[in-house]
Length: 189
Ligand SMILES: [Fe+2]
Ligand SMILES: [Fe+2]
Image 1 (cartoon, protein in one colour):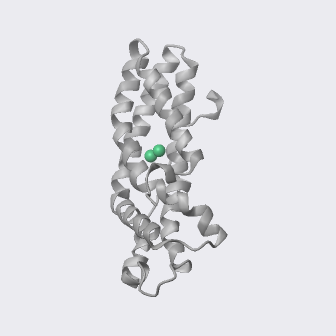
Image 2 (cartoon, rainbow, N blue to C red):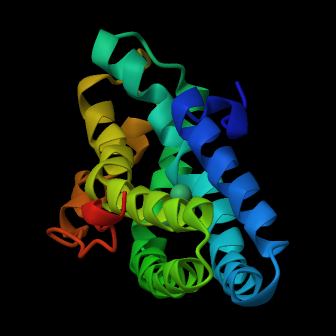
């Protein structure tokens, strides 16, 4: 089974697509809003693409893991490759979130100045999206890897037994920001 975009949970995928389309629409706005939206899209696009490759597909196994379903070795293998990359690339992805937040703040300011409530709402949605990823989705993707320890594939020489204990527990070193400062201002909503 290919662990590609179709394995990203539908709710997460739909949200990503909605944000992407709304931002593309905002880049077509005249003046400061369009310029700020283009600057944000430049930072956001490659970040979204990489998330859809390594951070979001592992979440497609959450329901099966919670149900205690048996996992195919091929699925475990594919997800382990993703979570390995995620742990390695996480510091960079969090730095990208900081740059995205700065660009979102600039977009919100432009939208307020030009009285564009729709784009201001998009800015709030994006800030909340990044916060949800840091607080829930990225940690959940790492937890999928940890959960494999409790849902080993049937064969004793399966994928997991080929990984050393130290390797599996390397996830211990992953540190998420305790609570990322959010740009969402409830009074603006
Ligand atoms: Fe995202
Ligand atoms: Fe993100």
